[in-house]
Length: 248
Image 1 (tube, rainbow, N blue to C red):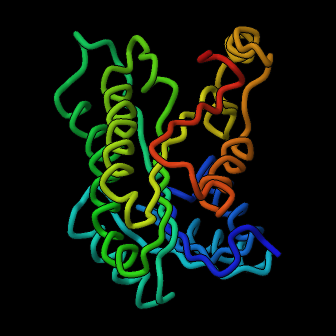
Image 2 (image 1 turned 135 degrees about the horizontal axis):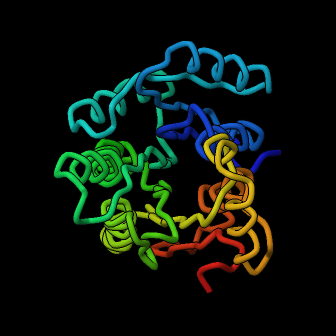
Protein backbone atom coordinates (compact mmCIF):
# COMPACT_ATOMS: atom_id res chain seq x y z
CA UNK A 1 0.00 0.00 0.00
CA UNK A 2 1.41 3.38 -1.05
CA UNK A 3 1.38 6.59 0.93
CA UNK A 4 -0.49 8.35 -1.90
CA UNK A 5 -2.97 5.65 -2.92
CA UNK A 6 -6.14 7.13 -4.38
CA UNK A 7 -4.71 10.63 -4.74
CA UNK A 8 -4.29 12.74 -7.88
CA UNK A 9 -1.35 15.12 -8.13
CA UNK A 10 -0.43 17.96 -10.46
CA UNK A 11 3.32 18.51 -10.78
CA UNK A 12 4.59 21.44 -12.81
CA UNK A 13 7.93 21.29 -14.60
CA UNK A 14 8.33 17.52 -14.28
CA UNK A 15 10.29 16.72 -17.43
CA UNK A 16 13.67 16.50 -15.67
CA UNK A 17 15.58 16.89 -12.41
CA UNK A 18 13.65 17.36 -9.19
CA UNK A 19 10.25 17.45 -10.89
CA UNK A 20 10.83 14.15 -12.68
CA UNK A 21 12.01 12.49 -9.49
CA UNK A 22 8.90 13.72 -7.67
CA UNK A 23 6.68 12.30 -10.42
CA UNK A 24 8.44 8.92 -10.26
CA UNK A 25 8.24 8.78 -6.47
CA UNK A 26 4.57 9.76 -6.46
CA UNK A 27 3.81 6.97 -8.93
CA UNK A 28 5.64 4.48 -6.72
CA UNK A 29 3.52 5.62 -3.78
CA UNK A 30 0.26 5.08 -5.67
CA UNK A 31 -0.69 8.54 -6.91
CA UNK A 32 -2.05 9.33 -10.34
CA UNK A 33 0.13 12.06 -11.81
CA UNK A 34 -0.69 14.94 -14.13
CA UNK A 35 2.49 16.77 -15.09
CA UNK A 36 3.11 19.85 -17.17
CA UNK A 37 5.63 20.56 -19.87
CA UNK A 38 6.27 23.71 -21.86
CA UNK A 39 7.99 22.72 -25.10
CA UNK A 40 9.17 19.16 -25.76
CA UNK A 41 6.23 16.88 -26.48
CA UNK A 42 8.69 14.08 -27.22
CA UNK A 43 10.14 14.24 -23.69
CA UNK A 44 6.64 14.42 -22.24
CA UNK A 45 5.53 11.28 -24.10
CA UNK A 46 8.71 9.51 -22.99
CA UNK A 47 7.99 10.40 -19.36
CA UNK A 48 4.38 9.25 -19.72
CA UNK A 49 5.63 5.90 -20.99
CA UNK A 50 8.23 5.63 -18.24
CA UNK A 51 5.73 6.34 -15.49
CA UNK A 52 3.17 3.97 -17.01
CA UNK A 53 5.82 1.25 -17.19
CA UNK A 54 6.20 1.62 -13.43
CA UNK A 55 2.58 0.52 -13.13
CA UNK A 56 1.10 3.96 -12.58
CA UNK A 57 -1.25 6.35 -14.31
CA UNK A 58 0.29 9.53 -15.71
CA UNK A 59 -0.56 12.13 -18.31
CA UNK A 60 1.39 15.12 -19.57
CA UNK A 61 -0.29 18.45 -20.27
CA UNK A 62 1.32 21.20 -22.33
CA UNK A 63 0.81 24.33 -20.27
CA UNK A 64 2.53 27.60 -19.43
CA UNK A 65 1.98 27.99 -15.71
CA UNK A 66 2.97 31.66 -15.81
CA UNK A 67 -0.24 32.40 -17.75
CA UNK A 68 -3.32 32.73 -15.56
CA UNK A 69 -5.87 31.39 -18.06
CA UNK A 70 -3.61 28.48 -19.02
CA UNK A 71 -3.42 27.42 -15.38
CA UNK A 72 -7.21 27.38 -15.08
CA UNK A 73 -7.54 25.37 -18.29
CA UNK A 74 -4.98 22.89 -16.92
CA UNK A 75 -6.94 22.38 -13.69
CA UNK A 76 -10.15 21.90 -15.68
CA UNK A 77 -8.45 19.37 -17.95
CA UNK A 78 -7.06 17.41 -15.00
CA UNK A 79 -10.49 17.35 -13.35
CA UNK A 80 -12.03 16.07 -16.57
CA UNK A 81 -9.35 13.38 -16.91
CA UNK A 82 -9.06 12.23 -13.28
CA UNK A 83 -12.12 13.61 -11.46
CA UNK A 84 -10.19 15.07 -8.52
CA UNK A 85 -7.12 17.08 -7.54
CA UNK A 86 -5.62 16.27 -4.15
CA UNK A 87 -2.03 17.50 -4.46
CA UNK A 88 -0.36 20.39 -6.25
CA UNK A 89 3.41 20.66 -6.52
CA UNK A 90 4.49 24.05 -7.86
CA UNK A 91 7.92 23.03 -9.11
CA UNK A 92 8.35 24.90 -12.41
CA UNK A 93 11.19 27.39 -12.28
CA UNK A 94 14.05 29.06 -14.14
CA UNK A 95 17.16 31.08 -13.36
CA UNK A 96 18.53 34.13 -15.18
CA UNK A 97 21.45 35.04 -12.96
CA UNK A 98 23.32 38.33 -13.04
CA UNK A 99 24.54 41.03 -10.72
CA UNK A 100 21.75 43.53 -10.01
CA UNK A 101 23.56 46.36 -11.79
CA UNK A 102 23.64 44.24 -14.96
CA UNK A 103 20.23 42.59 -14.64
CA UNK A 104 17.71 43.59 -17.27
CA UNK A 105 14.03 44.18 -16.59
CA UNK A 106 13.08 41.22 -18.76
CA UNK A 107 15.34 38.91 -16.75
CA UNK A 108 13.58 40.06 -13.59
CA UNK A 109 10.07 39.72 -15.05
CA UNK A 110 10.70 36.28 -16.58
CA UNK A 111 11.96 34.77 -13.31
CA UNK A 112 9.22 36.31 -11.19
CA UNK A 113 6.49 35.23 -13.62
CA UNK A 114 7.64 31.64 -14.10
CA UNK A 115 8.74 30.98 -10.52
CA UNK A 116 6.32 33.01 -8.40
CA UNK A 117 3.32 34.04 -10.48
CA UNK A 118 2.91 30.44 -11.63
CA UNK A 119 2.48 29.34 -8.00
CA UNK A 120 -0.33 31.89 -7.60
CA UNK A 121 -1.92 30.85 -10.90
CA UNK A 122 -1.96 27.12 -10.20
CA UNK A 123 -2.93 27.43 -6.54
CA UNK A 124 -5.84 29.64 -7.51
CA UNK A 125 -6.83 27.16 -10.22
CA UNK A 126 -7.01 24.10 -7.93
CA UNK A 127 -8.82 25.79 -5.05
CA UNK A 128 -12.36 25.04 -6.21
CA UNK A 129 -12.00 21.20 -6.31
CA UNK A 130 -9.94 21.18 -3.12
CA UNK A 131 -12.44 23.36 -1.26
CA UNK A 132 -15.30 21.18 -2.46
CA UNK A 133 -13.53 18.03 -1.25
CA UNK A 134 -12.29 19.79 1.92
CA UNK A 135 -8.85 18.28 1.54
CA UNK A 136 -5.64 19.13 -0.27
CA UNK A 137 -1.90 19.57 -0.04
CA UNK A 138 -0.11 22.36 -1.89
CA UNK A 139 3.68 22.17 -2.01
CA UNK A 140 5.76 25.07 -3.31
CA UNK A 141 9.35 24.46 -4.38
CA UNK A 142 11.37 27.32 -2.93
CA UNK A 143 15.15 27.34 -2.35
CA UNK A 144 17.70 28.03 0.37
CA UNK A 145 18.50 31.08 -1.76
CA UNK A 146 15.01 32.33 -0.93
CA UNK A 147 15.86 32.00 2.76
CA UNK A 148 19.39 33.42 2.80
CA UNK A 149 19.82 35.29 -0.51
CA UNK A 150 22.74 34.92 -2.91
CA UNK A 151 24.84 37.41 -4.90
CA UNK A 152 23.91 37.47 -8.56
CA UNK A 153 20.49 35.96 -7.95
CA UNK A 154 18.33 38.85 -6.77
CA UNK A 155 15.49 37.88 -9.09
CA UNK A 156 15.64 34.18 -8.23
CA UNK A 157 15.98 34.85 -4.49
CA UNK A 158 13.03 37.25 -4.58
CA UNK A 159 10.86 34.71 -6.39
CA UNK A 160 11.76 31.90 -3.98
CA UNK A 161 11.36 34.08 -0.89
CA UNK A 162 7.98 35.13 -2.27
CA UNK A 163 6.93 31.49 -2.47
CA UNK A 164 7.65 31.08 1.24
CA UNK A 165 5.51 34.08 2.19
CA UNK A 166 2.82 32.92 -0.21
CA UNK A 167 2.82 29.45 1.35
CA UNK A 168 2.44 30.82 4.87
CA UNK A 169 -0.47 33.04 3.86
CA UNK A 170 -2.27 30.28 1.97
CA UNK A 171 -1.80 27.94 4.93
CA UNK A 172 -3.47 30.43 7.24
CA UNK A 173 -6.34 31.11 4.84
CA UNK A 174 -7.17 27.50 4.04
CA UNK A 175 -6.25 25.57 7.18
CA UNK A 176 -9.85 25.56 8.41
CA UNK A 177 -10.85 23.78 5.19
CA UNK A 178 -8.27 21.03 5.74
CA UNK A 179 -6.10 22.30 2.90
CA UNK A 180 -2.41 22.46 3.78
CA UNK A 181 0.32 24.52 2.12
CA UNK A 182 4.05 24.13 2.71
CA UNK A 183 7.32 25.05 1.01
CA UNK A 184 10.47 23.04 0.41
CA UNK A 185 13.82 24.83 0.19
CA UNK A 186 16.40 22.63 -1.56
CA UNK A 187 20.07 23.46 -1.28
CA UNK A 188 22.71 22.30 -3.75
CA UNK A 189 21.03 19.46 -5.62
CA UNK A 190 23.05 17.56 -8.21
CA UNK A 191 21.07 17.12 -11.42
CA UNK A 192 21.74 16.95 -15.16
CA UNK A 193 22.33 20.69 -15.10
CA UNK A 194 25.24 20.45 -12.63
CA UNK A 195 27.01 17.71 -14.58
CA UNK A 196 28.38 20.29 -17.02
CA UNK A 197 30.00 22.38 -14.27
CA UNK A 198 33.69 22.25 -13.41
CA UNK A 199 34.25 19.33 -11.03
CA UNK A 200 36.63 21.35 -8.82
CA UNK A 201 33.98 24.03 -8.37
CA UNK A 202 31.33 21.43 -7.57
CA UNK A 203 33.62 19.71 -5.07
CA UNK A 204 34.21 23.04 -3.36
CA UNK A 205 30.47 23.40 -2.90
CA UNK A 206 30.24 19.87 -1.51
CA UNK A 207 33.04 20.56 0.96
CA UNK A 208 31.19 23.62 2.30
CA UNK A 209 28.10 21.54 3.13
CA UNK A 210 28.08 19.97 6.63
CA UNK A 211 27.06 16.59 5.16
CA UNK A 212 29.90 16.88 2.59
CA UNK A 213 27.80 16.00 -0.43
CA UNK A 214 25.34 17.50 -2.80
CA UNK A 215 21.73 16.45 -2.52
CA UNK A 216 19.92 14.26 -5.03
CA UNK A 217 16.52 14.84 -6.64
CA UNK A 218 15.36 11.80 -4.67
CA UNK A 219 16.24 13.59 -1.40
CA UNK A 220 13.79 16.33 -2.34
CA UNK A 221 11.18 13.90 -3.66
CA UNK A 222 11.04 12.02 -0.35
CA UNK A 223 10.22 15.20 1.55
CA UNK A 224 7.63 16.09 -1.08
CA UNK A 225 5.93 12.71 -0.55
CA UNK A 226 5.88 13.35 3.20
CA UNK A 227 4.17 16.72 2.72
CA UNK A 228 1.75 15.29 0.15
CA UNK A 229 0.73 12.34 2.30
CA UNK A 230 -1.33 11.97 5.46
CA UNK A 231 1.93 11.54 7.41
CA UNK A 232 2.05 15.36 7.50
CA UNK A 233 -1.65 15.89 8.22
CA UNK A 234 -0.85 18.44 10.96
CA UNK A 235 1.95 20.22 9.10
CA UNK A 236 1.12 23.46 7.29
CA UNK A 237 2.70 26.86 6.74
CA UNK A 238 6.19 25.43 7.10
CA UNK A 239 9.39 25.62 5.06
CA UNK A 240 11.53 22.49 5.13
CA UNK A 241 15.15 22.96 4.13
CA UNK A 242 16.59 20.01 2.20
CA UNK A 243 20.17 21.20 2.12
CA UNK A 244 22.49 18.89 4.04
CA UNK A 245 22.83 21.51 6.76
CA UNK A 246 24.17 24.32 4.56
CA UNK A 247 21.45 26.67 5.79
CA UNK A 248 21.74 25.89 9.49
